[in-house]
Structures are given as C-alpha cells and as structure tokens.
Length: 197
Image 1 (cartoon, helix red, strand yellow):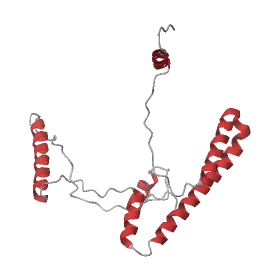
Image 2 (cartoon, one colour):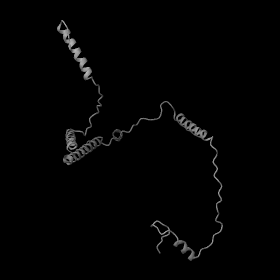
Image 3 (cartoon, one colour):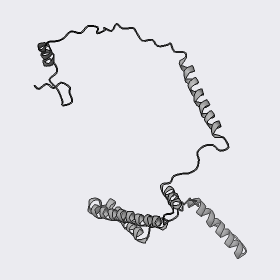
Image 4 (cartoon, rainbow, N blue to C red):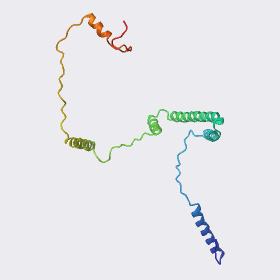
C-alpha cells in the first residue's frame, strides 16, 4: 500500500480511503433487517434464564448425544411449564383488570386470537352490486363449462333387459334351510343371518 502525500491531513485521508476500499472488498458492509416485536408480559427474567439454560443443555446434548439428553429434557420441560404458568398468570391478571368491562374483554380476546375485524368485501359498492357481480361471475363460469361440453355427444345408457319379479312362490321350511346351509360359513355379529343354530 503506497501513499504519497505532503500534508498529514491528506495522508490520513488517503490512508482511510485505502483501508475502506480493502475492507469493502474483503468484508463488505451487510445490511440486515431485524424484526423488533413488543416484549410479551409473561416473558420475564426467570423464563429467559430457563430458556438460556435449556438452549445450553440442548447444545451439550447434540454434541455429546445420550449422556446429556435427560438433563436437556428436564430443563426443556421445566422451561415449558414455567412459560405456560407465567402466561396463564399474566393473561388471568389482565382479564381480572377489566372488572366486567365486556367491550375491553372482547377486544382483548380478538387481539389474543389474532382475528382480523376488517371487512373483506370491496369498498364503495353496495351489497346488491356485489351480489350481482358474484351471480354474473358464476353464470359465466357455468356457461363456459356448458360450452366446453357442447361438443360431446349426449350420453344415453344401453337398454338392458331386466327381469321383473311379478310372481312369488312360498318356500317350504326345507327349502329355506337348504338356502341357509349353502350360505358362506364366514360370519360376524353384524350379519342378518347367523350361521349358528
């Protein structure tokens, strides 16, 4: 790196410029987006410490396998239990703080469940216009399907001679026994005719 300058300020400027170019070449500036969420009220220092301990034991378990698994499992279960207990305490206290104000309670529940209260229907149109647009859309769809099937021949099923049961004869007990005895021997409790007598 050769720098030629008469004054100290110019020398420092050239030096910084060269260093910046080298750094930009070998270690370029990377811009990252970090999502910042509002902290949850139930995620306190105790829960955070348990989470750190669990992650540390998980790394140990993944490194040394079976030896550390029980320690990791116990720490994970303790962290999950404590997190759920803190969450329950926090949410219960918030509900108690509403003192029977149903409007605040419903708003809180909808925020908690993530329900969107925005109307999904397009703005600026009346209900009648929206209904007519939907009806037109589906009518167009049906017409397109009919037009696509218009080129096919109309299906007519083949005529089959099906015997009609016009006459019935009464069977004797011997004939009924003979029919029953010739049934399959496999049966279950759901069969109408059981094979055992």
